[in-house]
Amino acid sequence: MTSSLQATRAEDVTHYQMYIDGAWTDGRSSGRSDVENPANEVVFATVPAGTAEDATAALEAARRAQPAWAALPPIVRAGYVNDLAAAVKREKARLARIVVLEQGKPLNQAEGEIDAVITFLTFAAESARRIEGDILPSDFQNEEVWIRRVPFGVVVGLTAWNYPAALAARKIGPALVAGNAMVVKGHESTPLSALEIARLAHEVGIPKGVLNVITGDGRTVGDTLVRSPLSDMITMTGSVRAGREIYAASAQELKVVRLELGGKAPFIVLEDADIEAAVDAAIVSRFTNCGQICTCNERMYLHRNIAEPFLDKFVSRVKQMRLADPMTNPDMGPKVNRPEVDKVEEIVNDAIAAGAEVLAGGHRLTEGDFSRGHWFEPTVLRVDANDALVMQREIFGPVAPVMTVDSFEQALSFANDTSYGLSAYVYTNDLRRVMRLSRELAFGELYVNRPCGELVQGFHTGWKHSGLGGEDGKYGFDGYLRKQTTYVRW
Image (cartoon, rainbow, N blue to C red; front, side, top):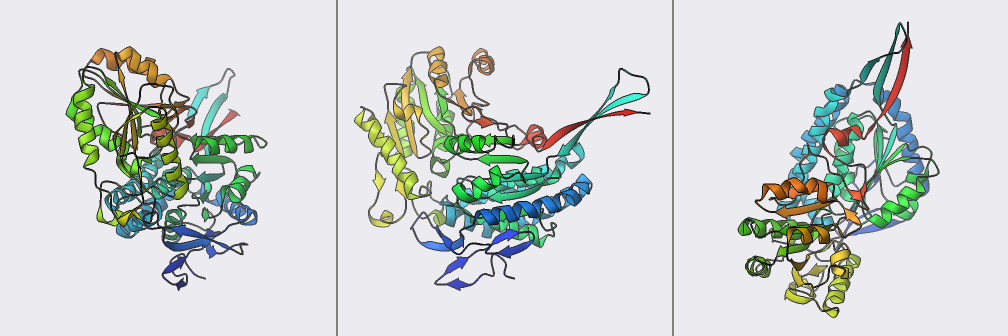
């Protein structure tokens, strides 16, 4: 038996295996899929091209393991998850390097992602003693009504490529502490981080079948996981397109589905704002992880009275950003793959053709140090119409379209003119305006006078096309439990 790290090497390519029922396996696959470094397009690893049969085997393993796992006291389950967090902490440097290699973010940002893995796992473990129920009086003598929270059973976790380690941990921690068994499938572009978490789960002794991690494409493996009667709940982070497909595929079995999807966050800066702080936040919230965050600053609305001084500072900062090998901690790394950088280029070219003014960047990088890899300049575009494609379509890349507004009310109107509803940013020192936001901004997550970065004790939730359910905090944890009512008469 070979582990994911002891697999054979040929020409510096590591050949990973899937983790099913406590063992490393190539499964039924006769082929392998390449994992490419987005900074230079070098294939540095392969994974099995998983099959529908592999997905079923993983679900069957989870179904067998789940009753015994659920029978353990929650604090015992939490102990395993805490041990997993400690193992991640010990291997932080190595895990961060793997994130850089498969995803492309700068090393210091990847280290931050591994810190988030530890936080997600430890917070979930801390929730073990907070699983609550209710005892209610009955309408009848000698009777009580008990409402318990119990696990769903088998949870399928489907994760996106932008935070391959953190998004896996965000789901694994609460699912396992709540008493579920789990099957995780990472995105095809970034399958390694979840496999590395599985390796550590195996090392700390999480019982076989409780956590399974498989590889393969969404059309085959993902579809099987979602449609199978062996899975009870689906939690997915990804695109709106994929979310719609999963929602439809799960309908036949009436699955419980949690979807954390895309966003088109407005970044509103009003005339009374702290401009320096707003510029700092706009940079961080747009260009961190090459703009590949669902809560990113996707479109900016600047009050006319401060638009020019804000843009002078913002554009100057953007032009100074350094792009380089992500291992050297530049300001920004590459996009994750070629289709993604193609999409960004298409959106920018469409905006320019429609009349957008390029204030910074605007081009794909293909020369010199950037002759290989998926690089796009940090870009700022001045736009005149809120219905422009660049103001409506999620870019998910290093492009900041900017519009000028005449009032707070106009900014709110433009901000709400979208099918998304994940996050929104507002910079103002007027408390009356702040108090209006919860009623007048149709987004699940609001950032007032601060940059992006949700906290684990909060609730990360999208409205409209940005998703169903949510992650983090007590409400996110509660999403991995269902309620059971018992009428007890004596």
